Length: 141
Image (cartoon, rainbow, N blue to C red; front, side, top):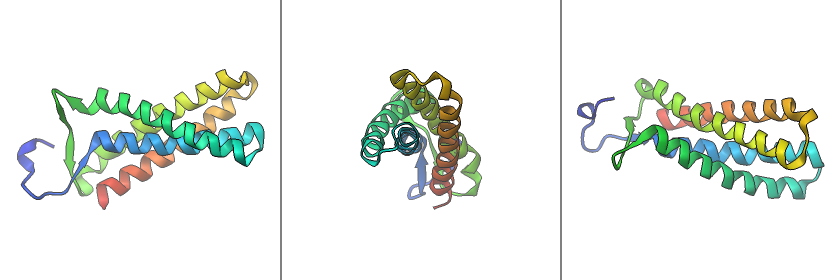
């Protein structure tokens, strides 16, 4: 939306923050799920939850700044159904890119090339579902 459509006091969604939020959630859930598939240990999965959130935060920062941060300004959209398409793009960008990073890290760290497709599938499902969830919540609440 062009800035002229915004008025003082309008509720807005900061797209960089949306990307980071979707990335952190995707990193945490996907890494915990993948490590549960590999190790079958709740303790390891809990550690992966924290490590995945950190990786998600870093990936989200990169994606958010690359897509929605220009010249010291960040892109915002007005809350509402009209912004749903824009927020879905932002949520999916953060979720899917983080999912790819988590799946690649899991394959490289655990040398599990035979399970690469299942790790990628788990991570992509997490990225898409959480990206859409964060986008819808951000746009409509």
